[in-house]
Length: 113
Length: 117
Image (cartoon, rainbow over all chains, first blue to last red; front, side, top):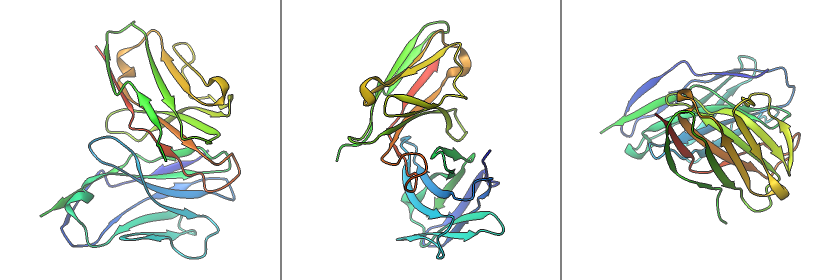
């Protein structure tokens, strides 16, 4: 069984500052992938970043980076230079060998002007 | 490239009525998923198809929910009879990857929001 834990129901960040959203996971699969999705108020799920369990380097996509610490089973999302448009719900998710995404409960990020 | 299409976007019904949601995945995507997202929670997998076969429906409440994927392309999710607790957004997603392959990235539709009164 897979489990994703996001312990921050809500986060606030000042515009142009960096913010870290926490995610821990648990799985018995030897090979897995970790994802972050953004869900604005409109409802669609937008893929942000992916990290494979065997990837040596932390994933980066523009202003998004994933701080992957395998021994600690954590996959935190770092957003640099926050923008007002970053205000949304953020979900951490994991896919094991069955390629089914298991989602955490999400973190509501609010960027303040 | 066209994304995952879902309809209807919104549906309001009374309890004990039936409802059906439709999903057209991205062309060529073999794997299709239906997720249920209750307000304030993360999406929960209901059913996973590979082509027109069911891979996993262990979390589908089979006494009231049913889903099919005819010809391995479009899919419908039906609820009959609906309960108050079925109020949620039903998200359809598709993936190019088969189990054990690729990264497992899912592409989501905009969702169908169901309100049961």
